[in-house]
Image (cartoon, rainbow, N blue to C red; front, side, top):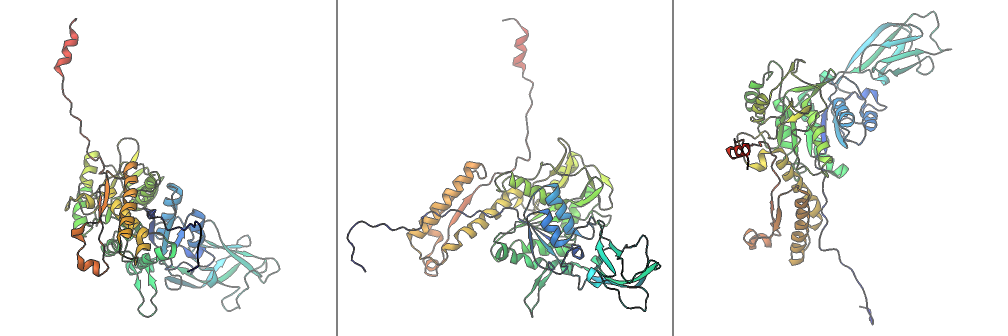
Length: 487
């Protein structure tokens, strides 16, 4: 050690760690997209897309108003256009190399030097254009150009000086096109290839944190979550993301005639299909805006993200009684229905969120997770309370991961306790908690655990419960009759 003579300064890391607050409601949508409309249709097949804007999402996935076949387009429309929230993670499972069909040697008529192919989902790279069935293929950008119009149809335009003369009245075309119906529940659920290790479908949720550094908060599969096999995997996946994090699955209840097209049928369907997890938010029925039908789950995700953004991205405020961007509630066949307060309360009492137009326009209505009414534990029953537990737990993991493998000593323990208490106090000051405290209890840290490198910190938190039932007692006060008499 060098000889020193004088006054010297050194620094150590601050003993109080600043918490890393994770995005409370980062939504992850799994479904199908019209990738044929993109420059590279295979770029985002079973690969998470992190998009912050509408343009970014459309460039990568394509866009179509056919929400029935392309659920991710519904999510793009709802999240970015109707609620103006982002970022959003999209997982497209429609693979143009597998989920496709073909048209061979179809004769089409030329009109005004153009041919419009009415088939949707055409893969431009597969298009072959001929003068006749037996002739050689024409050359793109020499004899003709092919591009998509605003409706997603391919328009073939005849080029001057090409092989297509003015006397030619028809062309023969062959092509492959997307077949969304070839996608199954198994594609949405996904899995991991045992030989390559490649993940697909919902299994890709485990890649989101390593890829983007953000923790999923909501998992949705609109159009598929009505299937009990899909919903079962959704509620399992959100409980153990990366073996660390927790999130919420937002599911739809089937509102067809085979499901629950009446509000009185909702509870039976829900329990029979086992939509009963505290990590599950169930929605019924569908909703519409200006004649366009949407899944309620998609709108609720947009509303949750918007509500979070209005509250410092802390999920302590319920989305219930907040404004939905809709103008009607409908069943799966488009039949408009009206729920009164008593009917909506019945649905809420079965652990299902719905939509009502009672006072102040259309609102989401319901505070209970899927576990209610079988459990009334406040940390599991109430949507905002359950989400606060998820969010606080996820934030603790991301904040104190850097402390893993540090020496077990008083400094480490005090750093964790002090910094967490400061953070919980700040949440309490904001009204996001009624109170919170962290303790390192001796009776919860046995000598054998300490010898094995195990530390247990006890976190006490009290998120506010939504004021679901406000009662006012009216009484005729006879003492005011005295005002009838002169004093």
